[in-house]
Length: 531
Image 1 (cartoon, rainbow, N blue to C red):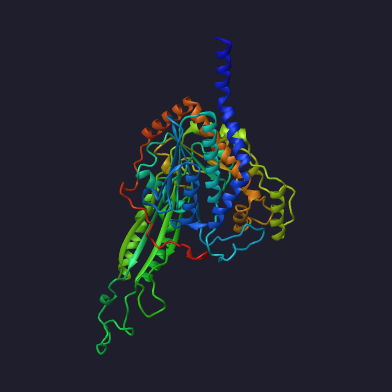
Image 2 (spheres, helix red, strand yellow):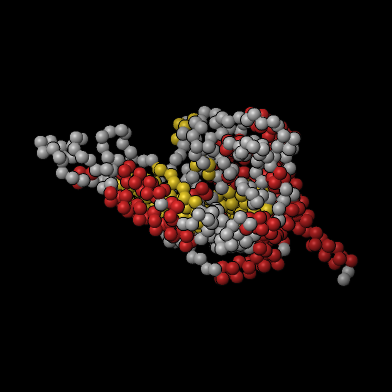
């Protein structure tokens, strides 16, 4: 081998490290711009299926960065699919989420207060998905910059995933084929529960999630009974007995389902049942039966069989409640997600990059902000106010062991998130980087929810999450582009796991996203927004 060949071999060996250095430098140089972008999305704070301005922001930004973008992908007005190619090579995907949660409006401040001009019951970012999206966007754009600078071939794909709180878009994108051409997927979420902090999931992926709206319709109240007053010219007059109506059906179903909750499944396994009452078509307080009432039930279970048992109970309760209240019943699926498939190859590759970057580190400004919050709550400011785990790494294997210590041996999955749908289309890794969270004060219990919401909107406290997550995404992508043996192993593992435990999609291929339901939304009047 000649001296020139020796130099070329060394260059090839160092190429991934050199490329990663370029990507990390891009994020450092652009950090102020990234945190400004985060503030844009955080302030918009639009709820599920109504993220019009947030989706438009991403579409405009991605087009400005040279991506081809399909707005409204999959028939979802607030979704998108973006693509950029640098020649023949693998196609790698990551994504943005940007839905906020009604009733959680909080300013980026050190005291409890809503954002300017809004009710405290308006939406706010809680997890926060604003950080999720800007972190993956940072990794995406840093990777693109590096591919151009170093001549690395391949394709980047970036999807906008609305309504994650309802597991809304990923099942639709999957059914419509948006993941079919993808070789690997990197899924990120800011940390929100221990031990999944600054790590990647190993064996225990998220489980099943079902969500369904039951609509009770009282379209023929006049047929409830003949008027008790034969002298009245008005059939079923105001003074006669009236049909119970839709509200009665809703209350009946809600009460029966909550009373039966403990009888649906064993009190183990980390399952949960949530409800929401949707508002539309209600008359004011007149002496008329309610024409329509809608209730949404969502349930998380470790496996599909358990989810189906809950479904049987709810369906039966809904039918009986409708009949009792003289209503017809309409049922509408909102989401139906499968448990996830793991990929050890990708988890190891990603964690290597996370370990190279290191855990988030909070600087003097972030520490001063955290201490001010503690003072506002009457807590003596701490020398190290942030939760210890937020500044530490934990390997996927150690996180798995800590997680399994609190779970029944039979349970294979825990909690829910709709990234699980992606795991059935391509090798997928799910990783977490700490969001800012404060160290608890002994004897006081948890901080009020507004504290974490506020910390999620302050640039000095969110910046470390964006930096670490963005660099980790970019490093993992660059490894997959430049080390084909890693991607080959990940794909082989994916096909083996999917073949060993095939789980077909739980909704039909022509499933329509429930964008037409009466979800909470902002009303816009010129430049003013009101809840």
